Length: 454
Image: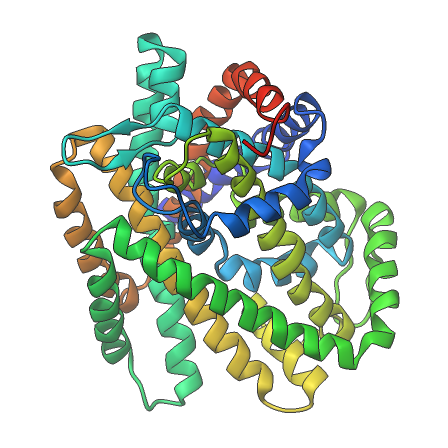
């Protein structure tokens, strides 16, 4: 218990309102201004580029199509945070926290644009033909040999985080939800075995198989959740304006205690909204560009456009569905929930007057968490390649797969604490690199948009 408290104290200091949150948000604001707000002005162009990215020119270099690179990134991004993270933000920051989640997503789009652009520009090709990139490579190749220590730090943090937040934490969440939902028909060992077989069949083969599966799984699971949530909200469309007004009012005034809700201040709304938003869409953490680096694309800016779509889809679309369901249901006021996942389930059950919420949340959490495992397998593997060479990739994938049942069967209090810490530590080297390399991205974007149809 003392170890966990010690780790939590360090984590709270790093991820609190004085270091990581203002740094992540500040970098996003700086990059948005430096890019002259193209993340707002060019969003339709980015959507068209994403659609065209389903196919690629065989003469261009890379491993997977631009669209599958985005889906691999979204596989890790669209996770339990879209359900649990949103509920947590409302539980502690009030409805106003959702507004600040939106704010971080809009500025995070510029961060993801820069990350994906730099990842393609400074990527490398291993002797076996793999395209590897991400913060460790644009730090080394973009900033020079004097900064290799920073690249190594990122790779170490990223590889460690992949086993925690990207593997054991996710499998533990899947097992807990599936066993509870099945009412005892399935136990932890059975679910762990199924996850081991499914995960192994995909991950051991490598990024091409992961990209193929993500290209199918991510759109299906996201569309499934969005459609189900949208249908429910359309039925109760008369309550949405009040929920939207509540979000805006609470965003600047906090929210007084009412019903089972303990109340929140303006500072709490900002803190939990920004924190949950940033850790939901992962803008600035440096994980997503590792996936984008494998894209078959000629101009790095084109992949940057796909990268900036990531926070929009994750937070503005998927997270908003969860938020409005919770607020429209009124369950956040009742105080009858003991955790964030329960709050989301109760909200869906209440608004549909049945057990639909239990089905939807269990299926969505399972798919979201499983896709996160696939995405983080790529991230961890690329970090391992940077540290130990390309021959380490097969061994890493085997070890990563074998860790799946460990997370499913053990208590993970220490793992949870360490996962949050190393996840946050990843951001520091990446944000430094983004600031130092921002002039490169600004110049590339300016040149590309002189003739964006090339």
